Image 1 (cartoon, one colour):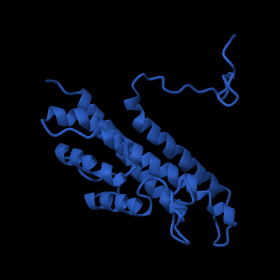
Image 2: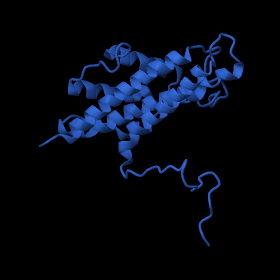
Image 3: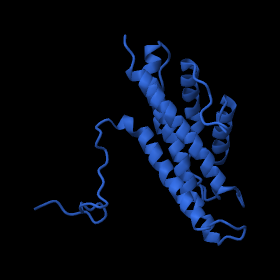
Image 4: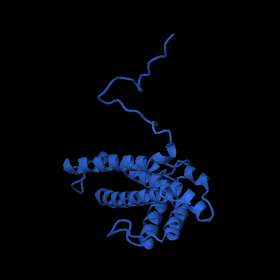
Length: 209
């Protein structure tokens, strides 16, 4: 008896057919996947802007909820980009005789927990903190945005569910912000960090003992 055809993961031919996990080195996909989440979130924001959604103070109530998947995707993209940097840093630290990285951090959603090794890579490599001027050009800028995201959503939970595990609201009452500004700043930061992932990879692979 042949394999049963999947209802949702159909093997229908193109257009629309995709192949995942084909590199054979999944550790190398963190940054690419980060950019995928960023791109989807950016496209969704641009579609809302072009359609005039969220254009006035009295937007339909359910339009506000479109922010949830967009913010989650941007935050997740940043998390993946930071983890990509940590993975690239691991062999660099080892080559320099520095303490390694705790791979258990790859399974945390805490940006604060990831921040230390990202900062250590920048300091060890003598990189400038001009990640994405004008909003992210100093170490303090980086720490500030990580702190802001951590204060609102420390475990990548608050934009996936409306309530926490105790049944309380995941976000403060009337949590208000400009989604388009959020998207623009996060886009800058994630793309900027992506450039440093490539820089770390270049250093990693160009090493000659």
